[in-house]
Length: 350
Image (cartoon, rainbow, N blue to C red):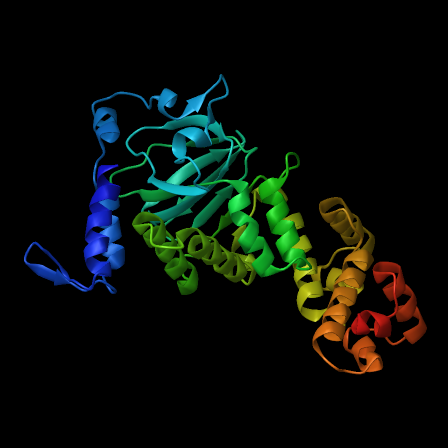
């Protein structure tokens, strides 16, 4: 696309250590990269020129079938797992679905989205919207200053990110499952992280890397996504959810965060009391949302942490038992054997 090609040329000059002269000013390649990016993305494309003339969005350029499923084969070069394109402005983008995961990053202005026909959200500058492969999506007309980048991502691109953030992270499992599930209520993630500087830096780095196609760019891009997920997991309080689900999902996230951060002393009854809800209601909510009881989730976290300490430290087993929150040694040995099919000492030696 013209604006991306223009950006590539400018960024390559920067990468070679040359400043860029434009309109009589010298731009520092580090401090002004975001302005360069915005200027490139603001260019009006030939498609947008036709939209300004009154034409509708031609969905044949993107999608096929009566449900308008946007095809990754039309959006990605062969062999690529991720690509970016500016969001098309100046006309409503009709209801559609994707056979890939879409990430939308709002660079400036805002866009209004209708998801699954019944949820309207406004994505503002610096915010992120993740859509799984089963969400329907329509976008209301954007203006000249409403600049966004669409990331077209195949699911296997996230493999490195998943390995980086770990397999025993409850928040990770909760959030990632929402990207991959084929049923249920959660089909998108809206992160309101405009003021989280590391997120903004990583998004800009990711765009720069994809545009410039540097050596080892696939690993670099996948690692950058892993770092992004790691930071987003630290800011789940910025995760906006549908109004109808806002309370319940926020409570579940609080419970998962409590296990993740305070597994030694985490108490479901204390959390229920703090939130002013019944213990039985909170138990049912966690079970219906995660598929496991709070006790099972807490026990799995404690045992995974105990196994990690056995592998990575020389702490006595009794100290590890107390560290992960158990005071009954025989009970710990029994549940450890049930999970790992061996005792702690043999596990460490193996």
